[in-house]
Length: 552
Image (cartoon, rainbow, N blue to C red; front, side, top):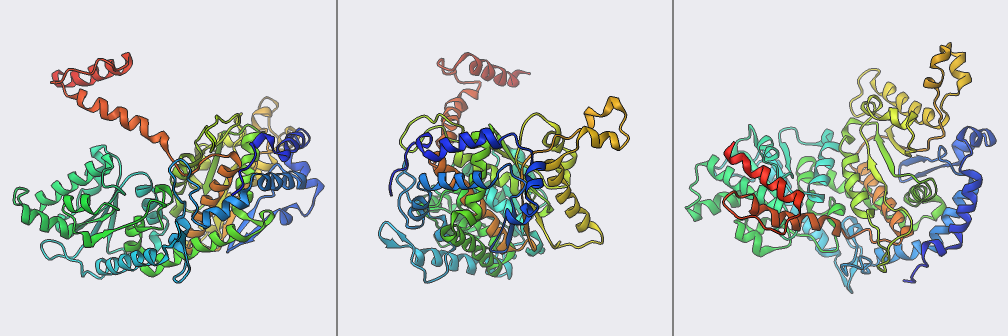
């Protein structure tokens, strides 16, 4: 793989800077007035998704130069290297091959000179068999009762992916089963998740690659105590306790030793690989709760959706490549307009957790300030991602999107058909979706406000500047396959951004320092211990205040 030149040394970068001076202040009203066919021309359909990117502040020259920048950044070579299983996660010396999790059977998947495809499908088969046993009532708990409750314990990608997928595909889920998700080490999260559940009918899925993640294992140990107490099993009776745990716990991990030590039967351990990053893992065994909820067939439909978008990303020319275009547009706004945030606005209640899922995918991936070769960047990188489902967000933060001082590009996501077609609802929802992107783009002038009879003193308050960019993504309906395509679309969008910015989108050292410091602070919260004198003044005082609860 040829090393890309420094970003600002690329000829296309300088050309984009010059072009931005010409195009940056041109209003979308003018761009549409110049080109009556813009709404049709700046659109793309791929794998059942329709992307309208005509409401972006670009012209043909800006798009051409962005594609030129992608080529000069060796984006194509990086894509090929990822799919070939090369160790493009350079700081950890690992391949980045979440795409291998969704290839069809029989397709060779090279990692380090060996084909891992058979391993991937072997895990999928074991997951499928287990999921069917639970769904059919054949996996029995310690007392012989069938499982009716599934609690997923994880954090980060081991939680956000399963939660998002369960909510997104709830329409397809087995309503005889109840699902809960525990991630926060705050005891309230666990207490509320198991409230009202019968221990004899509850299965815990503990997801931790090393089985040492502090938050996950703290919750897992609490779950074990809750289970044994609820079943009336004496924790001191190791044989019975192990039998109970084996019936009610499964693990998603790579550490047979730690899983066995916890009391989980290794036969009920589902593995994955170090070339699967946590935030890219929902199509691995981390998705076991999703498979139990929707069934193996629907889970495989989701994997097929992932794979379809993977292949589009891998093979489509950049000019017609949906993830590449979306990634390049984000680079355009972040680096030339000074944008610091992107809103993702799904107009489907089932996607209510999709923005939260994307927060980790995007910000843990591209929240970096050092290039692949260890140099500090001298340009902006990953923006903040946020969002809420429409129409709820319209009555919340859309005010800032329309009339605030920050420019925030938006991704609208909608569907032609509702899964719950109540009379009048879906047309109203979709009308709002289309209206919001139009209002952001074209706004309302002072003359238009006056023509509506607005009192003179209120005219400026009712002016909408417009010229606020957005993408609109449409699909037929939210199916398992479409969810897979949407997730893969954003995965590869993130990859594109990272390749342009010369950063490693696949490590996450930023999560470590706080955890290390928490390990130092935790013992000092015990009032019987002399605190570490090296704490900074603020932390030392906060520890003192916290410890005073014992005497209050």
